[in-house]
Length: 335
Image (cartoon, rainbow, N blue to C red):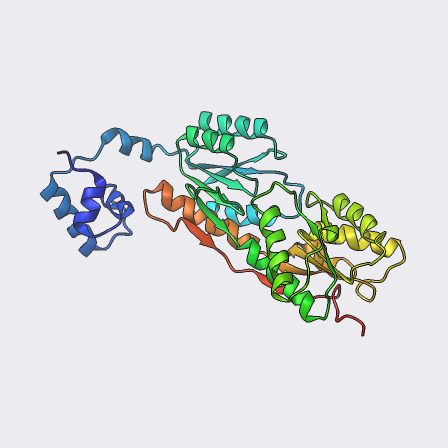
């Protein structure tokens, strides 16, 4: 039976990436480990695949980065994190905007394949079954950032959206709010829409607050949908005292609408957003939010992808910490 690089790694008690670095005479390997690997290679009579080594050496040093829309305030920080790590390792990124359209995603993947990129970072959009098939066809390492596939086949870097939403609503409840509306994401979005709504529901349930379907308004994470949702919220006879929005951009849209209609934030209604974008920080009043570590998510995604490209092992599911940032848009309920 022909020995493989995995056999050598097991024999030498090291990772596959370490064996690869020894074979390619990489200076980062200590002499002790190099000796163990070489002894394992000799003992197993391992013959490195010359074609595979040639392909690795002829790496294009390019990474395909696929995002829904670079004009969104959410994505630039992630891309910056990716770019900073890529630069450190002399990689170039190719950026694709897909507008959440499968056809554009397929086109991006075809270009990535044609350019023989070394890996792909896929950011934020839902990984449908059709998209998963297309991703697998490319045949190069893939890391998902701010999203995950339901079966957990791809490596991913995320936050726990359900817990983060739960913490946001618990914060409002601790301020004394019991009638809390939610401007949720898209109904069929398993990435951010569904888990954030579930976190909202769980926080209410644990505080013995009855869930009211009439207090749920769906949006698409953009300003206009938050604005339109607030127009409907202020028409309610029994108005909520607080709103949790599934994105900061929707939270700003909602606050803008409320103030134009003569309501004061937070005196008349408290608002909490989600994401931690600059717009929420510098809007007046500044928006209380769940801050995602977007820059660090980008860095971690790129670091994970580089490990996979080099044949090294990496954690499959990386869950980053989030932070509840209290600002001027929320306050204790009036007695």
